[in-house]
Length: 330
Image 1 (cartoon, one colour):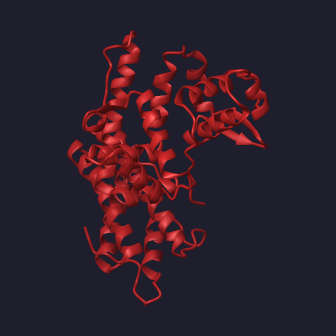
Image 2 (tube, rainbow, N blue to C red; image 1 turned 180 degrees about the vertical axis):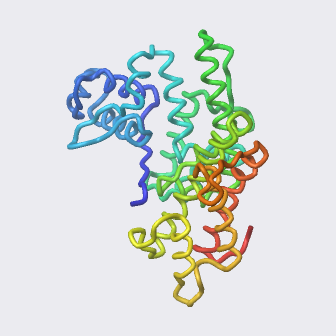
Image 3 (cartoon, helix red, strand yellow; image 1 turned 45 degrees about the horizontal axis):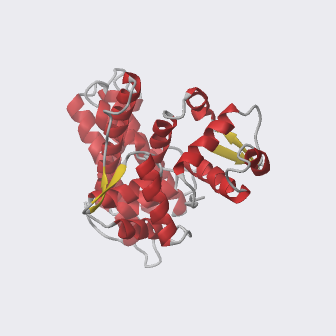
Protein backbone atom coordinates (compact mmCIF):
# COMPACT_ATOMS: atom_id res chain seq x y z
CA UNK A 1 0.00 0.00 0.00
CA UNK A 2 1.44 3.42 -0.97
CA UNK A 3 2.85 5.39 1.92
CA UNK A 4 0.89 8.38 3.24
CA UNK A 5 2.87 11.30 4.59
CA UNK A 6 1.91 13.78 7.27
CA UNK A 7 3.96 16.81 8.24
CA UNK A 8 2.78 17.77 11.73
CA UNK A 9 3.28 21.30 13.00
CA UNK A 10 5.94 20.62 15.66
CA UNK A 11 9.49 21.78 16.30
CA UNK A 12 12.45 19.56 15.46
CA UNK A 13 14.07 19.79 18.88
CA UNK A 14 11.03 18.19 20.51
CA UNK A 15 10.81 15.49 17.81
CA UNK A 16 14.29 14.21 18.54
CA UNK A 17 13.89 14.74 22.30
CA UNK A 18 10.82 12.47 22.22
CA UNK A 19 12.87 9.99 20.19
CA UNK A 20 15.49 9.90 22.96
CA UNK A 21 12.78 9.48 25.60
CA UNK A 22 11.40 6.48 23.71
CA UNK A 23 14.91 5.06 23.32
CA UNK A 24 15.39 5.16 27.09
CA UNK A 25 11.96 3.67 27.84
CA UNK A 26 11.88 0.03 28.91
CA UNK A 27 8.53 -0.54 27.16
CA UNK A 28 6.29 1.19 24.58
CA UNK A 29 4.67 4.45 25.71
CA UNK A 30 1.22 5.93 25.07
CA UNK A 31 0.77 9.62 24.30
CA UNK A 32 -0.37 10.16 27.89
CA UNK A 33 2.75 8.49 29.25
CA UNK A 34 4.97 10.53 26.92
CA UNK A 35 3.15 13.72 27.90
CA UNK A 36 3.92 13.03 31.56
CA UNK A 37 7.59 13.43 30.69
CA UNK A 38 6.92 16.98 29.47
CA UNK A 39 4.42 18.29 32.04
CA UNK A 40 4.29 22.11 32.08
CA UNK A 41 6.44 22.17 28.91
CA UNK A 42 4.19 20.96 26.09
CA UNK A 43 0.53 20.03 25.67
CA UNK A 44 -0.63 16.46 25.01
CA UNK A 45 -1.54 17.52 21.46
CA UNK A 46 1.96 18.87 20.78
CA UNK A 47 3.50 15.65 22.12
CA UNK A 48 1.16 13.69 19.85
CA UNK A 49 2.43 15.65 16.85
CA UNK A 50 6.05 14.94 17.84
CA UNK A 51 5.26 11.23 18.16
CA UNK A 52 3.66 11.22 14.68
CA UNK A 53 6.75 12.94 13.26
CA UNK A 54 8.91 10.24 14.88
CA UNK A 55 6.98 7.48 13.11
CA UNK A 56 7.05 9.41 9.82
CA UNK A 57 10.84 9.66 9.93
CA UNK A 58 11.44 6.11 11.09
CA UNK A 59 12.66 7.04 14.57
CA UNK A 60 9.71 5.28 16.22
CA UNK A 61 7.03 2.69 15.53
CA UNK A 62 3.34 2.72 16.50
CA UNK A 63 1.52 -0.40 17.67
CA UNK A 64 -1.71 -0.67 19.69
CA UNK A 65 -1.71 3.09 20.34
CA UNK A 66 1.76 2.91 21.91
CA UNK A 67 5.07 4.17 20.55
CA UNK A 68 8.44 2.49 20.78
CA UNK A 69 11.86 3.48 19.52
CA UNK A 70 12.99 1.91 16.24
CA UNK A 71 15.74 -0.57 17.11
CA UNK A 72 18.00 0.76 14.37
CA UNK A 73 18.18 4.11 16.20
CA UNK A 74 17.90 3.08 19.85
CA UNK A 75 21.59 2.73 20.68
CA UNK A 76 22.75 6.02 19.15
CA UNK A 77 19.81 7.92 20.69
CA UNK A 78 20.53 6.53 24.16
CA UNK A 79 24.20 7.53 23.95
CA UNK A 80 23.72 10.94 22.31
CA UNK A 81 24.03 14.07 24.42
CA UNK A 82 21.74 17.03 23.73
CA UNK A 83 23.99 18.63 21.11
CA UNK A 84 24.54 15.33 19.30
CA UNK A 85 20.78 14.80 18.93
CA UNK A 86 20.89 17.39 16.15
CA UNK A 87 23.16 15.10 14.10
CA UNK A 88 20.79 12.18 14.68
CA UNK A 89 17.87 14.29 13.49
CA UNK A 90 19.83 15.37 10.44
CA UNK A 91 20.55 11.76 9.48
CA UNK A 92 16.84 10.85 9.41
CA UNK A 93 15.66 14.14 7.90
CA UNK A 94 17.86 13.76 4.84
CA UNK A 95 16.33 10.32 4.33
CA UNK A 96 12.79 11.70 4.58
CA UNK A 97 11.14 11.83 1.15
CA UNK A 98 9.26 15.14 1.45
CA UNK A 99 12.33 16.96 2.78
CA UNK A 100 14.55 15.56 0.03
CA UNK A 101 12.13 16.78 -2.64
CA UNK A 102 11.79 20.14 -0.87
CA UNK A 103 15.60 20.45 -0.81
CA UNK A 104 15.85 19.43 -4.47
CA UNK A 105 13.52 22.28 -5.45
CA UNK A 106 15.56 24.73 -3.34
CA UNK A 107 18.75 23.73 -5.18
CA UNK A 108 16.97 24.56 -8.45
CA UNK A 109 16.14 28.12 -7.38
CA UNK A 110 12.51 27.66 -6.32
CA UNK A 111 11.18 29.85 -3.52
CA UNK A 112 10.48 28.10 -0.24
CA UNK A 113 6.70 28.47 -0.60
CA UNK A 114 6.78 27.06 -4.13
CA UNK A 115 8.98 24.15 -3.04
CA UNK A 116 6.52 23.39 -0.26
CA UNK A 117 3.54 23.45 -2.63
CA UNK A 118 5.24 21.20 -5.19
CA UNK A 119 6.22 18.75 -2.45
CA UNK A 120 2.67 18.73 -1.09
CA UNK A 121 1.16 18.05 -4.51
CA UNK A 122 3.58 15.34 -5.65
CA UNK A 123 3.32 13.42 -2.37
CA UNK A 124 -0.43 14.11 -2.08
CA UNK A 125 -0.04 15.33 1.49
CA UNK A 126 -3.19 16.59 3.17
CA UNK A 127 -1.39 19.08 5.45
CA UNK A 128 -1.92 22.71 4.44
CA UNK A 129 0.77 24.26 2.18
CA UNK A 130 1.88 26.87 4.74
CA UNK A 131 2.33 24.22 7.47
CA UNK A 132 4.35 22.03 5.11
CA UNK A 133 6.65 24.89 4.18
CA UNK A 134 6.98 26.03 7.80
CA UNK A 135 7.67 22.51 9.03
CA UNK A 136 10.23 21.49 6.41
CA UNK A 137 11.97 24.85 6.63
CA UNK A 138 12.24 24.84 10.42
CA UNK A 139 13.35 21.20 10.52
CA UNK A 140 16.02 21.88 7.89
CA UNK A 141 17.29 24.91 9.79
CA UNK A 142 17.52 22.97 13.04
CA UNK A 143 19.46 20.21 11.28
CA UNK A 144 21.73 22.87 9.72
CA UNK A 145 20.86 21.60 6.26
CA UNK A 146 19.34 24.86 5.04
CA UNK A 147 19.81 28.54 5.87
CA UNK A 148 17.98 31.79 5.21
CA UNK A 149 19.81 34.17 2.86
CA UNK A 150 18.88 37.46 1.21
CA UNK A 151 17.91 35.53 -1.92
CA UNK A 152 15.91 32.87 -0.05
CA UNK A 153 16.53 29.46 1.48
CA UNK A 154 19.75 27.66 0.51
CA UNK A 155 21.27 24.28 1.33
CA UNK A 156 24.17 24.62 3.73
CA UNK A 157 26.76 22.45 5.46
CA UNK A 158 28.78 23.58 8.45
CA UNK A 159 31.16 21.32 10.34
CA UNK A 160 33.69 23.67 11.88
CA UNK A 161 31.65 24.29 15.04
CA UNK A 162 31.42 20.61 15.93
CA UNK A 163 33.65 19.77 18.87
CA UNK A 164 34.39 16.10 18.32
CA UNK A 165 36.26 14.77 15.32
CA UNK A 166 34.04 11.70 14.96
CA UNK A 167 30.94 13.92 14.87
CA UNK A 168 32.56 16.11 12.22
CA UNK A 169 33.38 13.06 10.11
CA UNK A 170 29.81 11.83 10.48
CA UNK A 171 28.40 15.13 9.26
CA UNK A 172 30.82 15.18 6.33
CA UNK A 173 29.64 11.68 5.39
CA UNK A 174 26.03 12.85 5.66
CA UNK A 175 26.84 15.79 3.37
CA UNK A 176 28.21 13.44 0.70
CA UNK A 177 25.17 11.19 1.08
CA UNK A 178 22.75 14.10 0.70
CA UNK A 179 24.49 15.32 -2.45
CA UNK A 180 24.31 11.83 -3.97
CA UNK A 181 20.60 11.55 -3.10
CA UNK A 182 19.80 14.91 -4.65
CA UNK A 183 21.71 13.85 -7.76
CA UNK A 184 19.58 10.68 -7.93
CA UNK A 185 16.36 12.69 -7.53
CA UNK A 186 17.52 14.98 -10.34
CA UNK A 187 17.99 11.96 -12.62
CA UNK A 188 14.55 10.42 -12.07
CA UNK A 189 12.64 13.70 -11.65
CA UNK A 190 10.36 14.88 -8.81
CA UNK A 191 7.19 13.04 -9.90
CA UNK A 192 8.90 9.67 -10.24
CA UNK A 193 10.84 10.19 -7.00
CA UNK A 194 7.52 10.72 -5.22
CA UNK A 195 6.14 7.53 -6.83
CA UNK A 196 9.18 5.54 -5.70
CA UNK A 197 9.14 6.92 -2.18
CA UNK A 198 5.39 6.38 -1.78
CA UNK A 199 5.94 2.74 -2.73
CA UNK A 200 8.80 2.31 -0.22
CA UNK A 201 11.46 2.22 -2.96
CA UNK A 202 14.34 4.30 -1.59
CA UNK A 203 17.22 5.66 -3.65
CA UNK A 204 19.66 5.20 -0.77
CA UNK A 205 21.49 2.32 -2.44
CA UNK A 206 22.12 4.42 -5.55
CA UNK A 207 23.57 7.16 -3.36
CA UNK A 208 25.77 4.61 -1.58
CA UNK A 209 26.87 3.07 -4.88
CA UNK A 210 27.86 6.47 -6.27
CA UNK A 211 30.07 7.00 -3.22
CA UNK A 212 31.62 3.52 -3.10
CA UNK A 213 31.82 2.26 -6.70
CA UNK A 214 35.59 2.76 -6.86
CA UNK A 215 36.41 0.85 -3.67
CA UNK A 216 33.69 -1.83 -3.84
CA UNK A 217 32.42 -1.95 -7.44
CA UNK A 218 30.57 -5.27 -7.50
CA UNK A 219 28.67 -4.81 -4.26
CA UNK A 220 27.89 -1.17 -5.07
CA UNK A 221 26.46 -1.98 -8.49
CA UNK A 222 24.54 -4.92 -7.06
CA UNK A 223 22.83 -2.75 -4.46
CA UNK A 224 21.82 -0.19 -7.08
CA UNK A 225 20.40 -2.90 -9.35
CA UNK A 226 18.30 -4.21 -6.48
CA UNK A 227 16.34 -0.96 -6.75
CA UNK A 228 15.58 -1.81 -10.38
CA UNK A 229 14.29 -5.21 -9.29
CA UNK A 230 12.05 -3.71 -6.58
CA UNK A 231 10.70 -1.16 -9.04
CA UNK A 232 9.85 -3.79 -11.66
CA UNK A 233 8.09 -5.93 -9.03
CA UNK A 234 6.06 -2.92 -7.84
CA UNK A 235 4.98 -1.62 -11.23
CA UNK A 236 4.31 -5.10 -12.61
CA UNK A 237 2.10 -5.94 -9.63
CA UNK A 238 0.21 -2.67 -10.03
CA UNK A 239 -0.38 -3.48 -13.71
CA UNK A 240 -1.87 -6.89 -12.88
CA UNK A 241 1.08 -9.28 -13.07
CA UNK A 242 0.68 -12.07 -10.48
CA UNK A 243 3.99 -12.30 -8.56
CA UNK A 244 3.04 -15.75 -7.27
CA UNK A 245 2.82 -17.14 -10.80
CA UNK A 246 5.75 -15.15 -12.18
CA UNK A 247 8.95 -16.19 -10.47
CA UNK A 248 11.83 -13.78 -10.59
CA UNK A 249 12.80 -10.57 -12.31
CA UNK A 250 12.81 -11.85 -15.91
CA UNK A 251 9.29 -13.28 -15.61
CA UNK A 252 7.98 -10.07 -14.01
CA UNK A 253 9.34 -8.15 -17.01
CA UNK A 254 7.86 -10.63 -19.49
CA UNK A 255 4.57 -10.44 -17.59
CA UNK A 256 4.61 -6.66 -17.89
CA UNK A 257 5.18 -7.03 -21.64
CA UNK A 258 2.00 -9.14 -21.81
CA UNK A 259 -0.23 -6.59 -20.04
CA UNK A 260 -2.04 -3.90 -22.04
CA UNK A 261 -3.73 -0.58 -21.41
CA UNK A 262 -7.43 0.03 -22.24
CA UNK A 263 -6.43 1.05 -25.79
CA UNK A 264 -4.81 -2.33 -26.33
CA UNK A 265 -1.20 -1.11 -26.25
CA UNK A 266 1.37 -3.31 -24.54
CA UNK A 267 2.83 -1.94 -21.30
CA UNK A 268 6.34 -2.61 -22.59
CA UNK A 269 7.39 -1.73 -26.12
CA UNK A 270 9.81 -4.21 -27.68
CA UNK A 271 12.81 -1.90 -27.26
CA UNK A 272 11.97 -1.43 -23.58
CA UNK A 273 11.75 -5.20 -23.21
CA UNK A 274 15.28 -5.55 -24.63
CA UNK A 275 16.52 -2.75 -22.38
CA UNK A 276 15.08 -4.50 -19.32
CA UNK A 277 16.64 -7.82 -20.32
CA UNK A 278 20.01 -6.06 -20.43
CA UNK A 279 19.42 -4.77 -16.90
CA UNK A 280 18.63 -8.33 -15.80
CA UNK A 281 21.97 -9.47 -17.22
CA UNK A 282 23.80 -6.82 -15.18
CA UNK A 283 21.78 -7.82 -12.11
CA UNK A 284 22.79 -11.46 -12.57
CA UNK A 285 26.48 -10.61 -13.05
CA UNK A 286 26.58 -8.73 -9.75
CA UNK A 287 24.53 -11.22 -7.71
CA UNK A 288 24.95 -14.77 -8.98
CA UNK A 289 28.31 -16.36 -8.13
CA UNK A 290 29.44 -18.38 -9.92
CA UNK A 291 27.82 -17.84 -13.31
CA UNK A 292 25.33 -20.66 -13.94
CA UNK A 293 26.67 -21.29 -17.44
CA UNK A 294 30.43 -20.82 -17.13
CA UNK A 295 30.89 -21.81 -13.50
CA UNK A 296 33.13 -18.79 -13.00
CA UNK A 297 32.68 -15.49 -11.14
CA UNK A 298 32.16 -12.20 -12.97
CA UNK A 299 34.61 -9.46 -11.99
CA UNK A 300 33.01 -6.01 -12.10
CA UNK A 301 35.24 -3.03 -12.94
CA UNK A 302 34.69 0.35 -11.33
CA UNK A 303 33.73 1.74 -14.76
CA UNK A 304 31.06 -0.94 -15.16
CA UNK A 305 29.85 -0.36 -11.61
CA UNK A 306 29.42 3.36 -12.23
CA UNK A 307 27.72 2.84 -15.59
CA UNK A 308 25.27 0.23 -14.29
CA UNK A 309 24.49 2.39 -11.24
CA UNK A 310 23.70 5.40 -13.43
CA UNK A 311 21.57 3.23 -15.71
CA UNK A 312 19.20 2.39 -12.85
CA UNK A 313 17.58 5.84 -12.41
CA UNK A 314 17.57 6.33 -16.20
CA UNK A 315 15.71 3.06 -16.82
CA UNK A 316 13.35 3.62 -13.89
CA UNK A 317 12.37 6.98 -15.34
CA UNK A 318 11.99 5.59 -18.86
CA UNK A 319 9.82 2.69 -17.71
CA UNK A 320 7.61 4.86 -15.51
CA UNK A 321 7.04 7.42 -18.26
CA UNK A 322 6.10 4.74 -20.78
CA UNK A 323 4.02 2.43 -18.60
CA UNK A 324 2.15 5.20 -16.79
CA UNK A 325 2.02 7.97 -19.40
CA UNK A 326 2.97 6.34 -22.73
CA UNK A 327 5.80 8.82 -23.15
CA UNK A 328 8.78 7.57 -25.14
CA UNK A 329 11.76 9.25 -23.52
CA UNK A 330 15.10 7.62 -22.70
